[in-house]
Image (cartoon, rainbow, N blue to C red; front, side, top):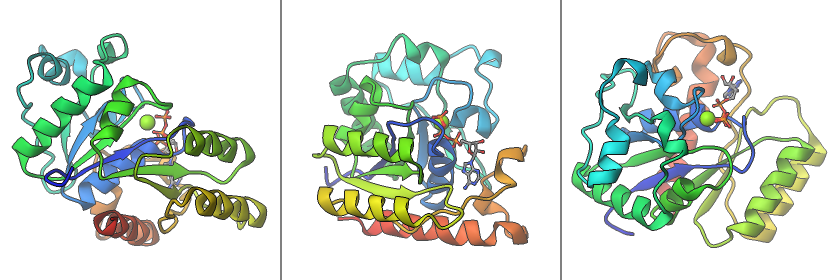
Length: 236
Ligand SMILES: Nc1ncnc2c1ncn2[C@@H]1O[C@H](COP(=O)(O)OP(=O)(O)OP(=O)(O)O)[C@@H](O)[C@H]1O
Ligand SMILES: [Mg+2]
């Protein structure tokens, strides 16, 4: 896939920060954020989209009829969005169809695309991964999290994976060493780490964190997300 630029954010473990990372990366890359997670905690709600108030299910309609959806405009403080719908849980297209649709849309939009996914590897996730230039895998230091990562690396070694250490706080030498070994053994690059910020889970506002130029507290976070965005741009 050379003519389209899709980054899928995926992890076999829930709650590792996929949605937050996808939202921020889409903003930094000026990409269309395509939300393929059907759960309430997904990017669409974080963006401020409520499917209950809409008559049409843009994503489901476009997956069915093939016509590229027109992303909702985020303005200058959040990414443009193709929102998800709860019914995607039961009406996921097979991976090949999803891959065809997504690559058509990316070509039609002529812009980078970032995809948020449901935890684990469902059909929609595999379809998106298949047409991705990069599959960014948020990786949390912790035994269960690294076990899940190890399983993912064994299961999908042929995708263009990039590990993104996420929610990183206290130095944890043993887990860090394990991550390095997993990455080396699987020959997968590791992006700059994204710090854990105590204020992020309590945030209510619906703009990209990295769009807050005056928020002093977001400086370190923003700098690291920009580094990850750069690593994605340069991934080859
Ligand atoms: N850098 C960070 N520092 C602290 N908390 C964070 C950070 N990034 C995300 N969070 C918080 O961690 C929680 C999980 O994040 P998020 O919803 O992005 O994960 P997810 O992998 O998409 O979860 P799910 O598997 O349920 O889709 C949220 O409460 C979010 O606000
Ligand atoms: Mg999520």
